[in-house]
Image 1: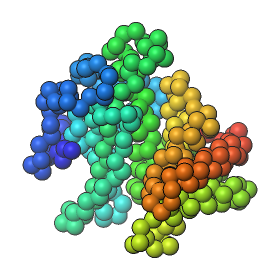
Image 2 (image 1 turned 90 degrees about the vertical axis):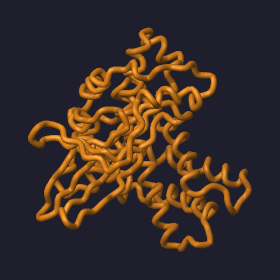
Image 3 (image 1 turned 90 degrees about the horizontal axis):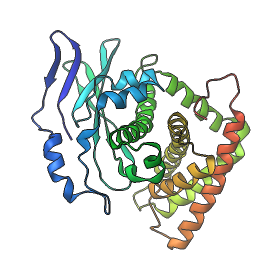
Length: 316
């Protein structure tokens, strides 16, 4: 992953700072693609997509997200997308985006790593988004876009939109109050507040109990009870985050997901994140995962019922 950063807003336009780690170019990447493509998927030169068209599709649904991506090229390099000052401390955010085939996950977001420069009184957060348009040949997309270039751009925009939601939520949580707050962040907070409300306490506890069991199944001898409880809370918020992100992106790009479908996919991912079936038979682990999925569907339905009509809820 590249360490170079292009800073925006300085005299003379873009200035590149590079720590010495060279990023693989798009051309050299494409030469190596044949050895890492998805099985049974035709070779495709991904460079046919146009960044401007991808960003234009995203701009239709979120000006905040477009602003975040406007100076970022999808070449794997880091670009400075935000820099704010809080007292004597400066907080900066660098974002890198890469498009490539790498298996059967649509996208991956590596959450912010942090570096601190005491001399410059600056904290720099770095996020990396990997977009994988492996669904390019699915019937639904082929029927919608006969033109391969347009189909690829639409799919990249849809995946990138989803992954950027995660980045923007993290941005809102990490940056000083007032600096990372966007419509997307506020919408997510509305959903998370509903998920943590007193009225949903019983169902929330049931979901967290199922997560706890899965964490116990996958725990190691070094895990303390406090560590395990923290993991339960992290996985719970992950499940709320994915409900919002998946349904927000799905609505924006005409690919809606219902609560059952979201719960079906992410209950399994939560079980994997919990550590797997280290201490139990696989059948026991699968049974508890199904119980989590059923409880999660009910929780998601209750969250929808708690969102008040007057609040910003365009994610549904």
